[in-house]
Length: 112
Image (cartoon, rainbow, N blue to C red):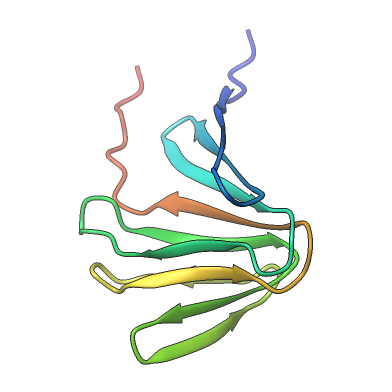
């Protein structure tokens, strides 16, 4: 019997922009994948608590991340480690860009 991880994804279309998101669950990993169809698509400013903080991985295209008083480029293949309560937003600078956010504080289930 194969013990391959099962991928669960649910697609959501964001109103008023061409931003698609899908929830990702692979084994104990949980996250969300955001697809930005157009240059300038934005995942609006938000922040996370210690309970739902994440890392971000740019898997296609590129972005600018902005916060309060800062701005950095997000580059393909790099991992970005956010701190709790660090406000941030993502702006696509290439069409068809994708960022994957993976929760950091995952409770690992004991395997039998």
